Length: 191
Image 1: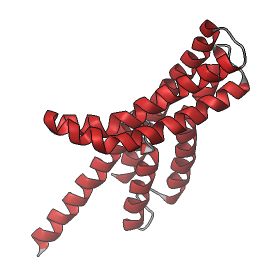
Image 2: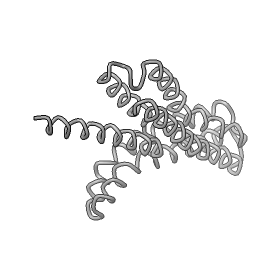
Image 3: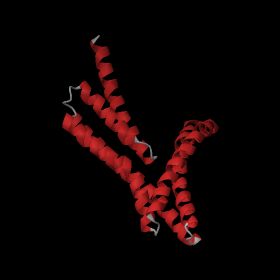
Image 4: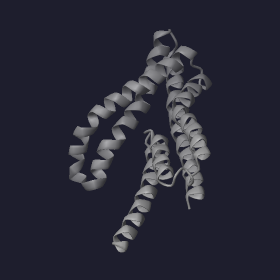
């Protein structure tokens, strides 16, 4: 019986760490990985009577998660502004990114099935890549469309769209860095 409990304890630790890694990887794809990391830390902390990681760290992680999850939208908006777009263009780039992500999520099951021909990697790419790619493309197209609609030259509209695209990618990278910081803090206090 003692051996079984030891195996279960180590299995739990492996699962805990695996979910943390998946959370960081999810952020690179534009998914809410910091939320997954936060939930994982909360469950682990609850199992350890909120001592490892401590309850106050969970509050810090919540703050980091909120900043991280809003970073891609905010950075997309800042990218539009930096490349000459208006505030309204920033709003439309954000809407385009959300609509693109929804369209990509609806394409994922079909593309995942097609990806079966490529094995596990094909399925993962077929399921995970479309929402991210469509969100980035949606932000670009929405900024481009709105700038054209406002009477801007196509070259200027492309610049605003490019700003939305670069901002979204910078936001995803920022989210991944913040997720890595969260994981480092959790592991530092958990073990």
